Image (tube, rainbow, N blue to C red; front, side, top):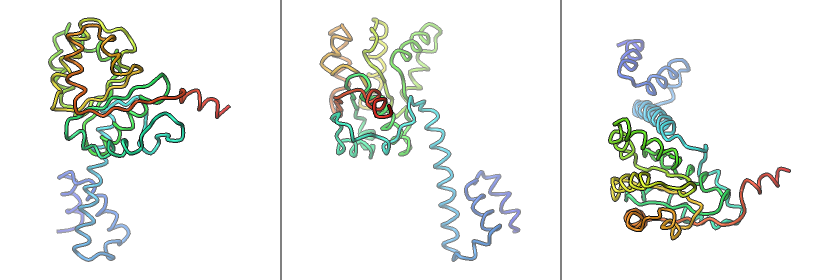
Length: 246
């Protein structure tokens, strides 16, 4: 079999990483530096890396993160109650395998959304399906889905995400329909998938935000058990960065 025929078959089988690696070795004669076993391992590694990178690109695009945040970009210099050891535990994503949840609370501007996106990005690196939602926009989308008959389809799409991020919970008033939507969403995910929620308000205040004791108990019962809590404090990071740059 000729090299051209081999390249064609790689293309037809969509072995694009292997194809590129093989073409490179032909162009540079780099293959002469390998034993047969090493050359096969090189081609397989190239294919694995190419598939991983393409999948990661799809996962990050589907996640729709608010910020292009990574764990490496998290600022530990400012005192805001950020526990490095806890973040290290979260970075291995075992909590997602265990279907646990994460709460990030703290005042405006301390970096809750950025931190949530960074943890979500790490989950994508570990090949989990993640999606970011602004809570207000999510409720609007799902209420519209109820009206046009696509509600179940939309819930099923969310349910298939290993991790969802609900950002800015409690920032706007929650009407009765939104409360029931949130309860149904979390009930579907309970002990099956993971949820991360950011809020300006500490968890005990969520009962007042939901303003319906029965629904509040049901929602928090599905969230709090087996969860991690990150309680940020301090000044607004936006204010600090603006001051430092001024």
